[in-house]
Image (cartoon, rainbow, N blue to C red):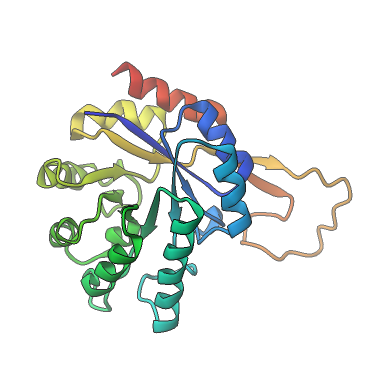
Length: 247
């Protein structure tokens, strides 16, 4: 079974670093600091020119839950069509109903819109009511991959659920293990839970190049300053790649 390493990135610079470090596939996002949102068109175009590995695009119009208004769903649908035309290899989406079940009608419409593209059901899966049922619905809809931490804060906490999901999937759908993934975590749980696909950011914080810094004005996320920038750490990705290749 092929061992896959997917890296989520939110900049052209991080995309290039991740590919050079051994990523098999990228999840292209904006705003990873808030869990990721739909990237910009120019950002995607630059990454597509710079990288020749698969690019799956996160289609998420906003931070927060996955119960979307009609306007938001229309945005998701139109963005899928747009990124398909721009040369994406896949899309990463997820819609839930208010009762916590997978919104199969909307997911089916998005699957149709995606056409031949790969489709990943993102971590909306981790906040659904019944993961076993959602897995079966995803299979029936033609979803290719489920990105999940096993409905826990991180994949170590969810490893027992992940083990059950991988067994239930039985090769019908890829279970992509995410949240808290690094080389050591892969080494700990890969054989234990039978996982072969892992998703990580491997990000580090670098300092802004700004020499002048007005620290009296704060416009961003609490606890993160305007002069802190997230960037993929090449060594983190390389270490993860090495573990996957050695096992």
